[in-house]
Length: 488
Image (cartoon, rainbow, N blue to C red; front, top):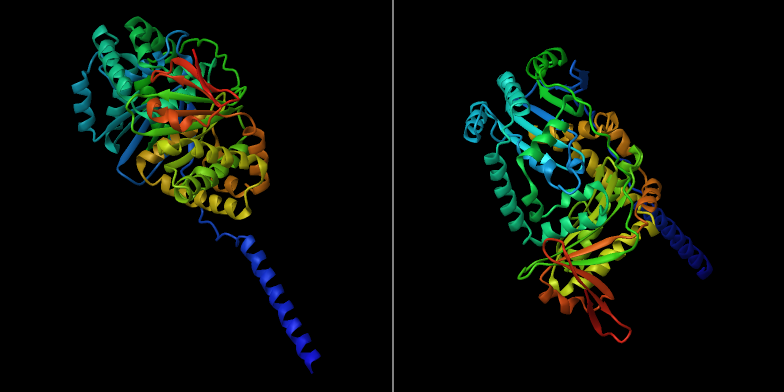
């Protein structure tokens, strides 16, 4: 009888272990996602006008607003050598005074059409965005033609932009976040045309009317641009109206572009940007990689979501929630014509800057040492998929996404087939892409007050010190006996 009870107990225990194992397998395997609702994005239609201007039209029936965007492939990489910032200055004239409208007149005009205007510049291109009430499409197109055909490059206007740019940069150079990000760009793009985007206030002194007028005349041409219109009008009406207002904008032969693929850093490097009296401490780190295929770009998007895309990501949970080292910690991926960047940014407490660096290093290295779990991947995919329509609800967000898609030439994979491409990502793909693009050295940048940070950086073997403008000052090294030395 005892033997029978023992056998029964053993059978019950084994059954319990089997059920437990099944539960554990269930926990490790994410449930299948709910069926996706159909993603019904408006179709992008394209046409090329007689002056070689590429036009993209998206017909949207709902909403009272229309979006008109001009993409010009005249980003900072096109600035002449020795004249960094010229492309940014030229873009600054989009929406400044024209020969027929003053700055005040432009502001009054935008108010009259219920409109707004914004300009952004990156390494590869410039985007001018005008939002306005649907009924004022003709007025918006006429305004765009004035910007392109009748800019005012007078000494007065150039001096005004130089003045505002100088004082804006001088103020921002005291911000550890701005200073760290700009310096990291300098280090990652060193020797590449993309480095020009990281210009300092010193470069502004060289701006002049002749230089910006020549740049504008050379690159602001229809065969180097694209117009994107999101409106109720269809392709035929839109192209007719755009041609009517921009047919006098004439093409010109463009200088050859010689962008080489981005090369990763040769070795790991730690830089300190000294900002006297700064109370905050920002840490940036990053690396660069050559251009990726479409599938790899989706792999990177999912990886970034898991690693540092949200307040529930690995990076945030470690540095803020577990260790309490940082106010925030995020990562981001940048995609450009010549390649891409992977960046991490964190606002950390000065007294824990060294252990915070160590934790970030550990998290980054884990990306290429072991795959992310299927659960992490599926959660990240779900977030990207279900958040995508929310990003397009607001008209300005819709226009921004559309412009980026067209400016980069992303195609249908990143528009109407976005869901499909995200669903195809898996842990094996993400790991393979991470090993391909993140196995190289990283550059680390700390921005803050060196007098406040030096004691807390004593554990580091070496680092280089730069001023707020990014100029090298000296190197700090520690010998085998632990003695710190400074060398200029």
